[in-house]
Length: 116
DNA sequence: ATCCTGACGCGCC
DNA sequence: AGGCGCGCCAGGA
Figure 1 (tube, rainbow, N blue to C red):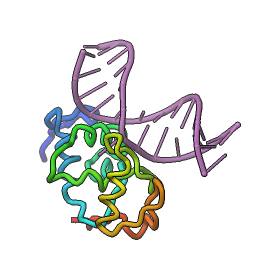
Figure 2: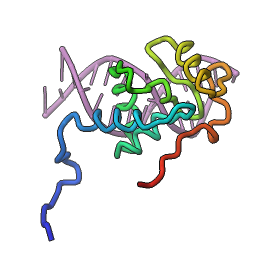
Figure 3: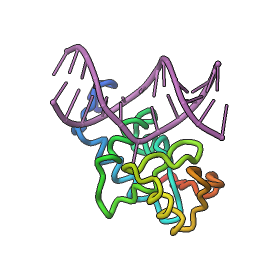
Figure 4: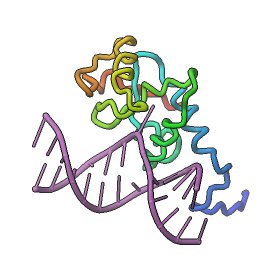
């Protein structure tokens, strides 16, 4: 047994590891599907770090990271650098029905990753 | 180490 | 239907 005694509170991993995980998760979201900030937080290993997820998204400007597929809870679009219209257009282009600032039938387009 | 800021979530008015 | 406030977490000054 590895009596490693890992401190539950302490983060043995790298400091910016959270951001890396978040980006990794977002990159796995397939086209036509969306995930809420809460979903990403949970998949990244921090169920209550939705806030931080948003901050990471804010700094993510990479083309390989489909940050437009990350929306707010309840199907609300959330932010997108102030260009909510662009986010809406991108989602619609992928087949996601968006009404106003709200994604319709969230349960249907919500990305459900398999338990790997 | 402390304080402040946020592409949030959720309840309540 | 909106808007407000509080709680949450990570990063930067």
